[in-house]
Image 1: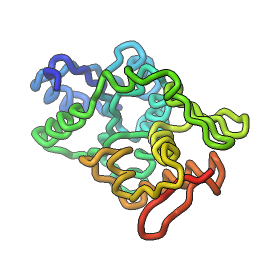
Image 2 (image 1 turned 45 degrees about the vertical axis):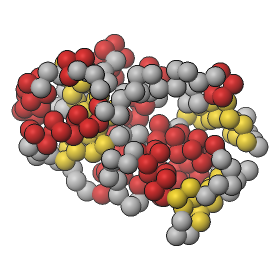
Image 3 (image 1 turned 45 degrees about the horizontal axis):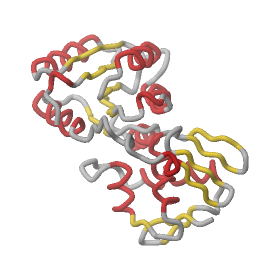
Image 4 (image 1 turned 135 degrees about the vertical axis):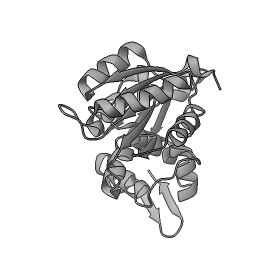
Length: 233
């Protein structure tokens, strides 16, 4: 893991007290911190600064955190950037919406400084700047039946129609499609798509499966009751 002062963190929240509290504690640990008060501005800053981690509030003016996360995950230069929500909204539906938008973690506030720093450091351990750099060009394209998946561009073409999926939906699809007819257990999917150090609700994977099915058709992903899911042509 790199030194703390080599990590750049973008903090997005419309509450000045939260900005001040979180920034102070992150800077005290040596992290570089950039701040923004709304999602639209945050996206512009992220494109310019290329932070390793973005911490987002959910409830914000102009563009909320869910929409902001979805936009960030569509930007190629930010594909390796980790996104975590820091919010007082602890309801299941809010967490599901966050993960569905492509978030990597969900941190509830209020939170103690030591716990916050611990969570941030755990997230940054997963940051890999060299991810996918050594892939052979031909391995970026996966074609199964009418579906073509471009790993590099994060684009799906289904029966000639180009689809842009949020990051987690894309990663879920590419995992299942990488080995057609193989049954992936729920644990395998969680570990591959969310990471084994992330705790998500039981419904998270089901929500993502439903979203992918809506976009590529209902017949490509089969549910194996009590086990998991598999991709079929």
